[in-house]
Length: 384
View 1 (tube, rainbow, N blue to C red):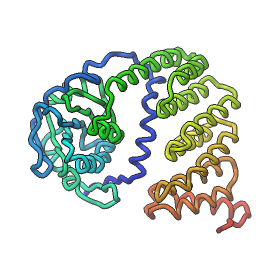
View 2 (view 1 turned 180 degrees about the vertical axis):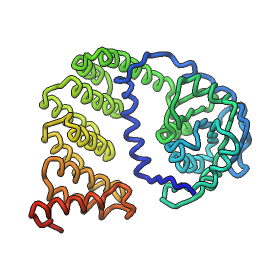
View 3 (view 1 turned 30 degrees about the horizontal axis):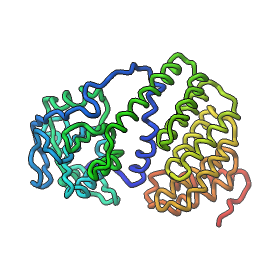
View 4 (view 1 turned 90 degrees about the horizontal axis):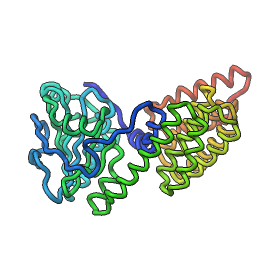
């Protein structure tokens, strides 16, 4: 049986990175267009051909949406790794919110035979236990619609071309939110608790579209320095930490493209770390990005890596388990990049200590590489 691994760290990483991805379109050459299916639109009726799982018979087949119920209409495929990784999370959400009127409907466009065969595959649940796809998805509705009618009514109508993609349908049968299913829990919770403000969200999306049109237009004209300065103007208009985080990350990318002075980049990194200091995985995201840019020689100032090390070390005490292992691994690689091999070794020893033993992140391998490097240089590795 094929094995797909997913753990809590992968889920949390996707959330932290997803908040920044909303600004990725700034550097992507495309036009800004109004979606036919958008937030506030009536949710199209479902005409699904095959209902493979129905929550062990707890759920009825959905065609139209009932008043005061909340639905997740999610698009997936057997060949899509992120879709498969989302399955344990969807199952957990269905269980958590079942008594609050939630029904999750996942829709593929593959043949019934392919989907049924896929049920025998194995995946790991959120606790790392190996289970079959059939066991994971039995808590919600898993379906397939080979004629593609649902794809047309949702994905094409909303101009979405990537999966997994989830559409949240609110209690008035209108679209409340569209995005990656691993990022929807806070929104789903707010909708079910009656705390979701659709109009505020629409205003936020219009603001993001304005950012993309303004800064993206400058970037596509290769006016990177002007685009980076324009970011500052938008930052003055918002207090939302998530949006600030995404904009500040984009600003650094623009500054690098503009070949900005290293001192400017250093200040931008200091501001970015300050904006996310209470979110360990955001801090790791920024630090790892700095490491990659340094490795690719897009950054040359070692001070940026030094402040990255400090930022990560500051948040480590508040993190446990596999996440702590990843943070120590990040510290190790940053230290190694700036030539501090003994410090790298000490951090990597901690990464191995807090890992789950699977070495999925290559912790043990990097530790052994560090030990060989130090021995080759005639230095005895200092062990705690």
